[in-house]
Length: 219
Ligand code: HEM
Image 1 (spheres, rainbow, N blue to C red):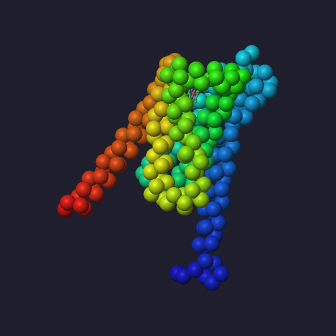
Image 2: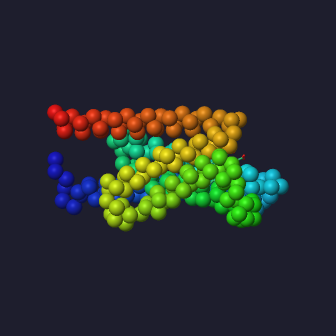
Image 3: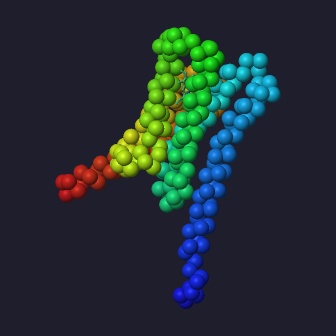
């Protein structure tokens, strides 16, 4: 039966979808801010050790890596479930990952009184820092091109290509985690498995696309 006049359900559905998307983003924003708020609370209440820097560096590093991996999981999840919501939150997850990496880096610098000469010598002398630094550098173009305007300026294809950098960035961040020698954390294993699964999926997809292109070129 056609909908009665004035009772077209579509505007209502669109409103519900819009509200659901906004609520999801709000929940995500609050959830992703919680580790930072917990750290700030710990620092101000003196609940962390006498020297709070190591705890803050470790926590922000872990959250940056977790969010990088979650960000990479969202596209395969959207494809597998044919959902659009994972794509709606991808940008926010990526920006939070970059933000935690920035705080991680800044707090490390602050721990050494922003003595730039010393910081540079540490990065060149300690391979795990150089690897972390390379990972952080790769996040810069990703964060800088996260706006809708950048997608329009670069074009969707070039933008997608550029954002593949999230894979090497996560790979370097994970290598940095491993090289920091944190083998007592079970997370090192979980993150490694997630990263390996993501890379396998990505390579399998690239391989399939390549084969399809070859088949259309040489039928
Ligand atoms: C993409 C950027 C980065 C990510 C995701 C990241 C992530 C991590 C992770 C997961 C840890 C181990 C935390 C733990 O369980 O103890 C860590 C430790 C650390 N990171 Fe990073 N990191 C990044 C970049 C950097 C940079 C650029 C520096 C400084 C140049 C840095 C300095 C450190 C330090 C000093 C530690 C502590 C190592 C220790 O306690 O022995 N990180 N990082």
